[in-house]
Image (cartoon, rainbow, N blue to C red; front, side):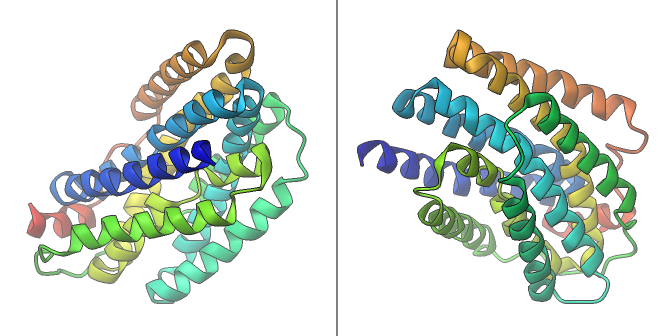
Length: 272
């Protein structure tokens, strides 16, 4: 019980703080930049650390593999939301994306825990979804965000974490891992961005997120391989090094990956 409470407190404290920082970054530097930074393994790395200390390194290693497969579900969520933005309001888009995520996660529970297979599935999903992601159009102008919006975003993130953690409390390592990259940050940021600015900056945000997830997949794969034989410190450190290397390569090698759309700069200006 104490371990579960520690894990819950960790998640609830990290998510709102991270959302506050990302919201400020989106307003000042653009939504694609914020999307890139969502891929930072802040939440997942912290959860793996607690799991290793409380449940043991085999459990944490299995959870890391689950988180790696979770990239597939996050990709499905992203394309479900993105393809819906031109026709529906954010509520319908969220319902479609959440249903897609749920179905994907249920299917992935049957996938064996093999690093090479899981990594290939994650990379293939990211490449496929990026190819299908709509291009941002022109977004509507909006007044500066009110002072209460970022605190509301932080509260929304905390409530989402509480809900997901409650549902996943007894699901075992693989499903716990599958739910660790569940788009808590993504849900919070896209619904507020979509409702205020329209679909264009949401598409910019999702593009940045998906590009950044290549690095997240590398983190999970390396951590899954190294945590059990070498311990949590080496596993997470090596995973972070892999994340930074792949993250940097993606920003350098992928054409247009770091370029903000015109619509993002227009919509971020009022909040600057």
